[in-house]
Length: 408
Ligand code: ADP
Ligand code: ASP
Ligand code: MG
Image (tube, rainbow, N blue to C red; front, side):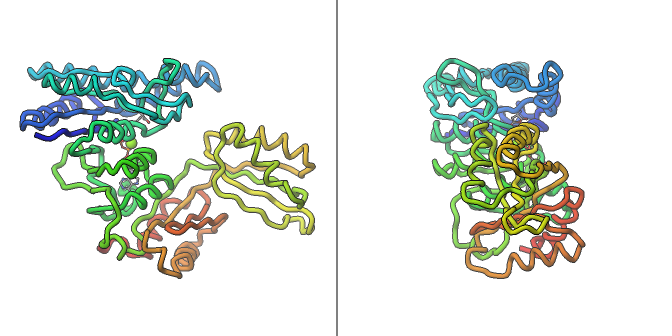
């Protein structure tokens, strides 16, 4: 008998009929003699709908109340799932984050799981029940409901698998595994049989939303092997696990893209020590994460002035512009420009560690399509370029072709 944790995403529980189908699949695994814990997301579109309601009520809604609101999406799913099981004559018990004793820090909207007390869950499993846990939510030390950030149900599943020392952790979604790039925008994308934690982490943090970043971090830390599969098809899926020899052969294993960033440029910043810190400190104090940074001689040509450019999450642009405009005034910079129409395309591969020339090939592939590169950043296993967002799909396909990722 195995203990299995399964997670079903929003599109897989998007209607009563789909929830019934999930219940039937789960019951099948249960009747094979396994213990099953199911983590569910909100029904497709529900979290967005709830967020919009909050924003309609006030433009910058209170984060605590937003978490109370958006956690209800998952509550609906687990309740309906348990009703579906019962309608099929099988006992199932729903647990919200706090009932499953998933404890987090107090950062509303992006809380981190700090601890899980699995005793209650085990108790229900011992009594032969299927347990359905609401994904994406937890409880902070003061008893407030928190949520784990968009896509956070993946993290709930992996954390529960780690806490319960489950035999398998299966993430069911609307694609049948992790592909070389988003199969919904690149028809030549190829499904990978296996991918290392490290590459998956980069793919996720550079925009491949098939897995939530935190879930992969958790899996790597606790050695949880993740199996990504299609919610309705029987195909074998992708295994996310430790790096092995076979993975090193690939120089580039995937292309990711993100349209969730925006760019801010401060022009004519006095070029003297301490300026970068003056600009960036208030942003980090406001909880805004800065990603790429470039500083170069001002377009005006003066040697003692620089233009300072960086990217922030699009959702933080408005606040970042406010913060930065104040600093710019204080330091006597010329003006602050915000640009939402950017995208980041990235190449990822552990094989890049030992291969030169990947960057040049990437830049050439983009140039061939007439796509201008506006910012570049590299690390040991990835290269990212910021481009104009309308070229995203073209860039992804061009890079996929240039590196022949459709071939094994
Ligand atoms: P769920 O609702 O099940 O959590 P998500 O929408 O969060 O599903 O993630 C699945 C989606 O991730 C796919 O529909 C696909 O468009 C997107 N995606 C982006 N990059 C990749 C990739 N490299 N491989 C597979 N899917 C990807
Ligand atoms: N419902 C949440 C979201 O849409 C969490 C999840 O689906 O994983 O982001
Ligand atoms: Mg998801």
